[in-house]
Image (cartoon, rainbow, N blue to C red; front, side, top):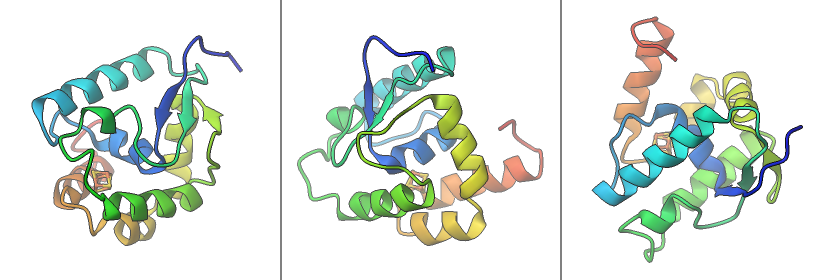
Length: 137
Ligand code: SF4
């Protein structure tokens, strides 16, 4: 395992959000930050630079809703912490995150955890298109 200089704190459900990120989000600042984080992760796929955290993470810091309760986000975290077999403070690479996503997030898991999210229709549509081979994974 290659150890990183700096860790990127990510809450559990954001590992899944990043699989479906296409430049849309809560604000320009948020999408810009998410794009930069995702670009870095894609450039360093085997670097164990992700650290799983509880609560607000590096993406939340640029979210206009940072200081709201984010109850659904907490529920998504609980769901994906279990579904992806993660623990808080665990370090992993983006490649490992993708492998866990592909291995554990079937349609039932995705629907059960994500259906309460405001972005569900968008992510669900991307998921279906990828499964049909219309979009690259
Ligand atoms: S539906 Fe919401 S929580 Fe689920 S992957 Fe998409 S943005 Fe993330």
